[in-house]
View 1 (spheres, one colour):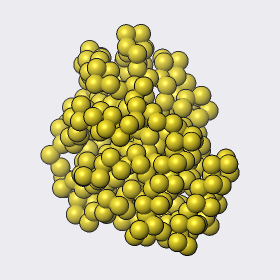
View 2: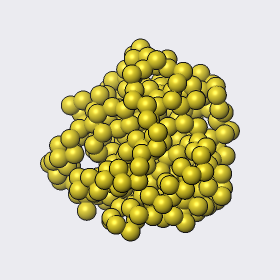
View 3: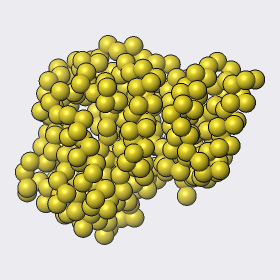
Length: 327
């Protein structure tokens, strides 16, 4: 009962448009067992208040795969890791347009173009991507996102002028854990791109990956670091260990633990889009519908960069069965 009273007190504070404190977030992370369902319900109440019943759908395409120079411990596309991921150069414009049309046909409102690598080195490749974005915007009714690695301010501005709506660049994890995840570029490097995206007037999609061995305090460290940048969208990834990566044998967290992370993020980000992305199917399993009841209001549909996702009709049915809407 004590934990329920605490949850409801903090919920009511958030509903009144007041931010929760670091101390309150730490109290919420201590909620366990039966109290979790009260936490989920409170997060759902906050989501319903600020985000309504709509579920945003996003599809992604791996427009350039593998051979990445960076040594991120979780990534199947890193050349430092020994995986069987496909390696190919930047897809032709017509192929990306085809994938965008398929995404729209599956019900997606957002389409994200993703490329492996630290950044787009070839200027011609960058210009091709800008041209492709413009064509998608003209031919389809999709908001176009991109995740192309590091960006200068001029590049961010050029993407916006091409019609890009939102840019994804995750912090990945807490600053205190970051050196154990990646050493070929720094946490500060990631922040520089985030600042360029914001300065250029693009919406920011910025989140991280959970389940990489971080503590609960580090999870909150990441959340409050994200809060400083006020991203419009927080992508929430759950580690899906890939054999051959440094985290390939990382023990998985439980579905309820991942749902608890989602709920806490809703308390911290009451008005933002919280998008559950990679690892949803493998980690939540039969509890996937609960992610919406724990505060999420957005998902990736279809396949991911190197792993399979649910068939889009199955996700659409799940959303409909919950009495939620994609319109």
